[in-house]
Length: 303
Image (tube, rainbow, N blue to C red; front, top):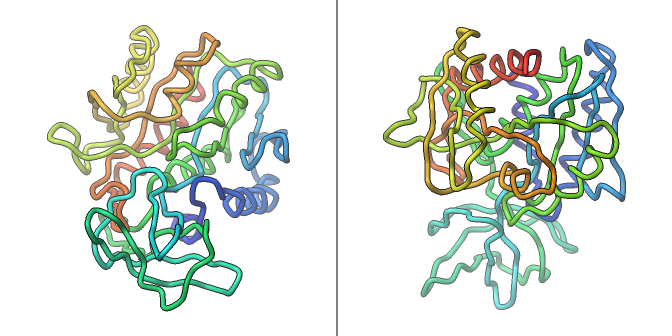
């Protein structure tokens, strides 16, 4: 687990510039696919922008994981504009690169605006992300961008023995979405699906806690179809894998775009809870991550 996950965490992939992650995934797949149970068809290139699709066997369902992160865009006069919803604190370290070279700077907050302290002007439109610092112990992993590196990691583990299904790496999820509609159209025209699981990260709350298993979301701002949820929950109970149930009234994921699509596709969000969402110090239980991997494997063989 450690090397693959650490490699994923070190890649900068702010919404709008997911290409570095796509290139990493293509390289990883090329090296590892010979050992997988089924050899997938791989779809990528300009018509998919920086999205990546893997088709295994004869799919009935798909797993979606977004490959972008929150971050910042440099504006004028050292100002920073948020991408997605990063939590901003004075002194937070950011990294990136422009035409003059690598950038490492701090966030400075002033009158509800965010600025950087880099000693020279940064090219307008440069994308900056949180500086990475990974802490791993026997119980937790803490780092920037566990959302959604853990969802990607889960998908890559699933690829090892997946026989039938799509694995979909989407873009722009943190900043309004937009890639899932054209991906769904391609999927439905190529090898149509009936359901989708959203491989993403949720948050800890008074009802969703560390070490109590992966969270199966019964709803967030959007509501999956109850009949499908009941099927998922029945299988989860049969599996013996530790899980917990989430019920929220806000938040969203690629599931939103599936629900709003013109296709009759059921969906469910399943992911581990984390503390310190959208900060450089996101924290997830290793036990919950493992239950995520185990449950996805179980469900994709039986749904």
